[in-house]
Length: 281
Ligand SMILES: C[S@@+](CC[C@H](N)C(=O)[O-])C[C@H]1O[C@@H](n2cnc3c(N)ncnc32)[C@H](O)[C@@H]1O
Image (cartoon, rainbow, N blue to C red; front, side, top):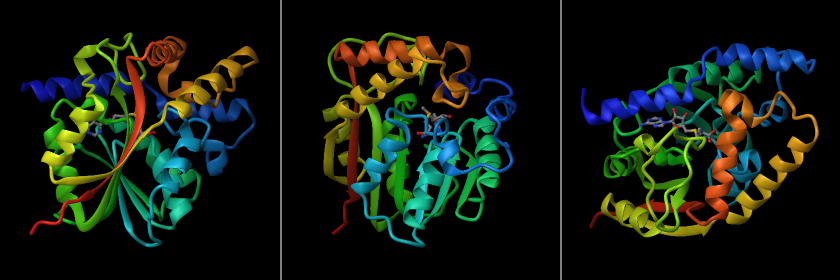
């Protein structure tokens, strides 16, 4: 087994808590909601697995110009929350690709339950080697995925390949911000074995090498501060069974606590980057 395959297997093991769909259904029923008839407002409390959740996606969308009927690829789509959200807000079609089969099953099922199956589609696949033709997506987005991907050159080259000539790339990731490692486990990794954080400068270089021109780099620390304050506030009262913790099983408080500690100590921070494909002369 190659190094890359071993990493990917560990990534899938980390994310896929067994019976995810069953747990989602059970949590819905426990709060009196029909799991087959859901609204995006209901699913948004647990289906956006990144710092800031749905509010962060809305902010990111305010920085993009996604046209109605355009084609968007969501790389590392998780259970499909950002894809459904983007499709609804922009009237585009969003294709989600993710390594974790249990997440894709949940994404398909939740799109059916929310009536968004015509504007979203989901497929199991690896971000560094997708099966798409060249130049087919107008926008590629990826939220909190690159941290799991060692072959960053391969990831960004693949994103560049599938984008149209005028296409836009939007990355919202956790970056290394000083010389200290984060405290593991964190929501994306049990240990440094599956965590490959780059600094802003390293990410910039990797993107430029892959053929991108960077248009925006924005520190999203304010989003993280508000997110952790909201979680702390929610945990003082009875937490809703339909929270982001649903995706992290029983270890959620430790994973989120370590991420908060790593953020507050300055070792990591969330960053938004928007880039355009460099026009070849
Ligand atoms: C923290 S979750 C974020 C999910 C989603 N982007 C969101 O914001 O809700 C990271 C996701 O990246 C996926 N992932 C990690 N490595 C991947 C790879 N090489 N190819 C495709 N997906 C990958 C995982 O399976 C997981 O669903």
